[in-house]
Length: 604
Image (cartoon, rainbow, N blue to C red):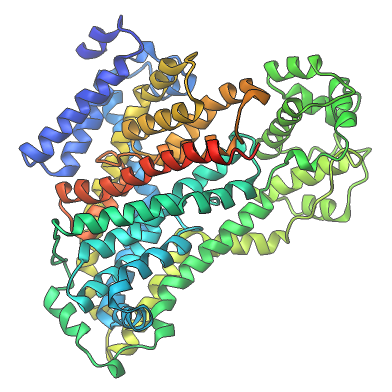
């Protein structure tokens, strides 16, 4: 065990916070004072977090498993875990960033981005150009991951700056203001989707509330950006493959030399549309049970309390011990809201985490034609989730309402083409086609030569972003989230404020907003459900508090920080002064909206 870990072996649960602070100070000194390249600084900080981790003090089983390699010392594991987490992050973003760089190059070089901007300005006027990006971005960002969404809209912001000759930072941040909010508050983004399930909330309600509640924070961050723009001017900087001179020359071309508006916008909108369709298909086919799907609660409770058929016996056998005990204690003739939420949660765990299609278990159950057909197709992923749900609906025809999924083949095709890597490939090929149509006689060799510099830039961004992801995950492996949970356990405080603070601390500690949301929701739900009827507002306000808290203070351990900063050409200090401020204003304004809403409109 390393020296620092030995020194901390007898320390309290607060040691992970020491790890966080030491690593934070190290990164600041390395990048801002010693001017070390961000990749080296982040990788060294990630390894340092591993060396400082008190492995013996980790009580979380998953975290201990991450360090469970008795044949290797913690010194070696700190290095190898860093490399593994870096690779995991790169695997998620590498193809997307590379393809987005191609799309950006082609849209700028062909004049397509300028064509879209000219249409925007003619429609909204130059003074409202930034607001037009803000509003359209808020809507377009609903179904698509923030990093993908940002990379697709970035060429439009660059072209808008070239067209107007000002406000480059404003146009970049216009993309970010709304995209951050939908990422943390609106399904089908993974964080809000999982939060709704963890907190046992109606998904439709969370979408509506998230979209409406996000408007005020977006307006606040937009006003903040405009205020920052009065004193902070960030220029558009040269990028490999596209000089500013060539971009300005492109912006001065007559309208007749530009591609049509349809072809210009298609490489951006088609990937967004494909990803949106995929998100909708997943939401439909993978939708879990809700309490409203129970048609006869007393009968269902009775069958699960005294299971006599194979399906009921299997379900109850896989309940957690605590939930089995609560089930037995429940009143069989009067199923109240807490016990129904418990049953729904266990049913959703069953359909999402298991394959229930054992023929013997359902031998004496009459299956609907749809169920039998889907089972015969050997379904995977959300098609399997749908099959599991259909099987349970057939097993409890009087207790569970019957629903219909979608065609499994259509689902598979939609999810494939809507996979963000595939969708970006489609966008890249379309943008290349637009470039070839505009610039005649382009050979494959010339296209490859044009693409080479953006790929080089993308490679640097992928490395830095992946190093930031590795650093955040190493802080997670160091037990920072576990320490936060222990710190707040048993505290009697305002639950909305507690949810926001916990989410914010976890977000700052390890970088990922999604991880912060999932971790906080799993921590807060037992407290929230314990409050029961005493909760003076709708639980959706807890959902909002967690979502807004998870936006707080994005910095160098967040991959979004590097995606926005590096692709925009901002320095680290400029990114902290703009991007970090925007997400923090969204977070703080969102907390105020949540607190006021819970008082003025409790929706009980």
